[in-house]
Length: 106
Image (cartoon, rainbow, N blue to C red; front, side, top):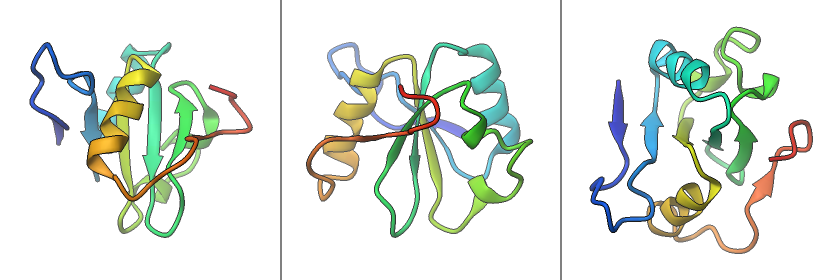
């Protein structure tokens, strides 16, 4: 199931963020239809990690089960700025620079 992670109002910088939790089909569809987008992988006991949508490391076909681990969420957006804005509101305890995937270098 997909759902916007914010109000979706035009004045909300995080308004275009979509969250996927335990929805491989929806998540795969989003990745395939937004090849130039970004994914913020949020996992329990790890810092959120920013990826390009095409990154193999977040492909559920290559890594089955990884994206459905307990506490795992995928936040997707066409822009990095929207994901950073979401992070400030959605996970205010995360401070500092957003970690980026070393494989896809978003």
